[in-house]
Each structure stands twice: as C-alpha cells, then as structure tokens.
Image (cartoon, rainbow, N blue to C red; front, side):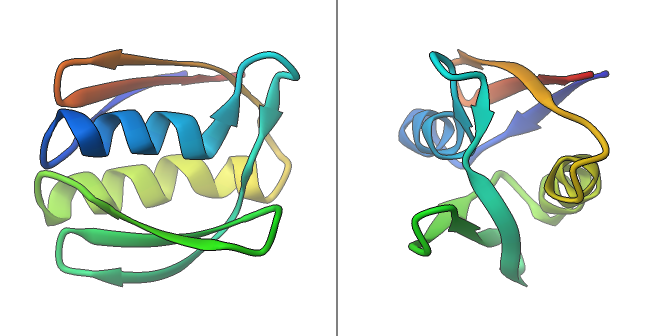
Length: 93
C-alpha cells in the first residue's frame, strides 16, 4: 500500500520521513499518535520523545493517522519513505 502525505513545507516533509522510519534497520520508529490539532500531528517515538509535524491540512493529518495506525498496531510494516518536495511517499506491506 502506498500513500502520499503533503506537509506544510520541505522541512516538515524531511522531518516526517526521518521520524517515522529508519531505512537501515527497516524499523518503524513511531509508536503512537499523541495528539492532533488542526493540521498539526504530535507523535511519540520509541525513545519516548514527542515530536510535532505540520501537514498541509487536516485532510492529510486524517489520511496519515488512518494509514499509520495499522503499522503502530503491528498489523503492517513500513517498507520505505521517500521525500518529493513537500510530500512524503510512504509504502507499507
């Protein structure tokens, strides 16, 4: 399954890509979504830190939350992420 998430800007796209997936170990780093406020997503990582990511709009936040929930629940695994300007392509199996 593939999804494209539009972020507020290129920096936010880079941040999202680096925070949710570690390419070398093929490991998902995000453990849960802590909060959603309009177009802002607050996620928790395996190291117990929390990070805020600004997406383009509320629709993208909802789309990402729906997509990533099965990964957080360990039903699916992330395969890759790729940055395309302000967008992040995320693929899961």
